[in-house]
Length: 88
Image (cartoon, rainbow, N blue to C red; front, top):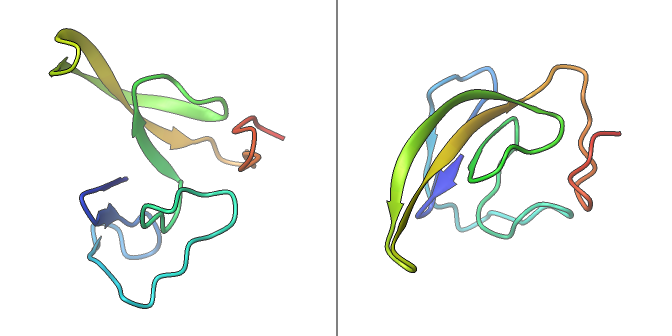
């Protein structure tokens, strides 16, 4: 998960927070926004190949509305095509 230059790594070092890195190189098929890995994602819609862990109600400012964000984990054994975001 990433936000404002922070990313929660989901590797062997669970809970390690990764901060801005001058040597970061974006990976093909992933967002340019400091994506280290995509085992876990937080977004508004459920992503194919991921399981829902939890959901949180949020209020959006523009336009003013209420909705939810979903915390998701990639399902074991699922490879997600980085271009289409669909499971292979």
